Image 1: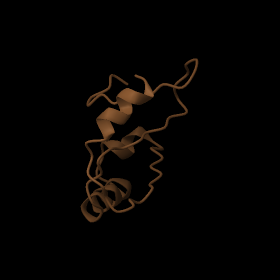
Image 2: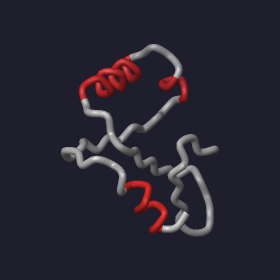
Image 3: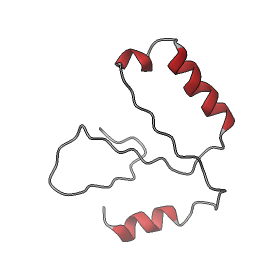
Image 4: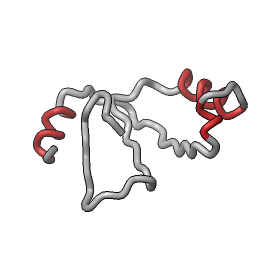
Length: 77
């Protein structure tokens, strides 16, 4: 996807107030599937912040040549 395609997708987004930046280090994979203090905290955050237009996810666990950008609703990775 090139920059112009990404710009055309995001141009339909409504303007929002500045959103918080969250670092969600997953740690143990069990923190994503069990009921524990981490999951409780994530649920609380989800109920207190506005719904974002988009989410950016940056991972150090993916190797590729160059920088890749996707705007798929359900990316394979």
